[in-house]
Length: 295
Image (cartoon, rainbow, N blue to C red; front, side, top):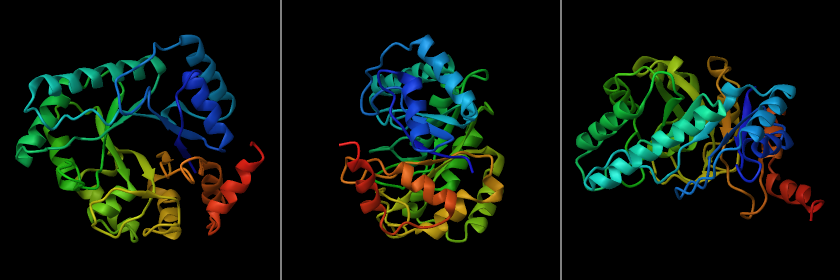
């Protein structure tokens, strides 16, 4: 199983991210190159990058299973303010260059929100932006399936397909998020049936990342609130089937589940649960007990 989680990218940069992932028992991970809410970025340290790659190699983490996530502030869908739209384009270009310097193959991007624009216009804006951004020799952009909160684009497979069809480059793929799919109205309890739909519309070969999250919300709520594995409306059994599905066996699964009491990362315990196939109904207590020894 290729399983990991969101990790930090702090003073030790990619090296620190790798150490953190290994402490959770992960063989994959996802990171932001800086805070997802702003554009402040530190210069990359090539020494730390090479040390990270060595540590990954020593511990069986492949670079193609390390995913970058673009910051939330990027909005490719709305160009009412041309300067803001161009800023999003330029900033994503910068993030792609940082990924290239780090040796990262994939970067996940939220398609964007239409806000007051007509939805078809917003989708065209995303396509135009991506056509100006994507380079054949750069990291691949993965469009994330969204929950449909507010005016988010990319909350249906048809919208994702329309963007992919409009982009001239083939250096673009998809990241599916289980919480977002549920909240957008896709019942993934019969996950093989859902994969058939993706394969028909988009092609399974274009799915390069799975965000594995439970949801606090009922099917079709369009809320986008992640929950810990097995403690939400999707349930552990379904998420375990997603994690172990043979058709996606080579695709990294990344946990973005919430910290317990906003303080304790649950990833070691959740990864253990997925490896064993055994649900932890007392996950919250187990995580808190585990971190007591570090206090």
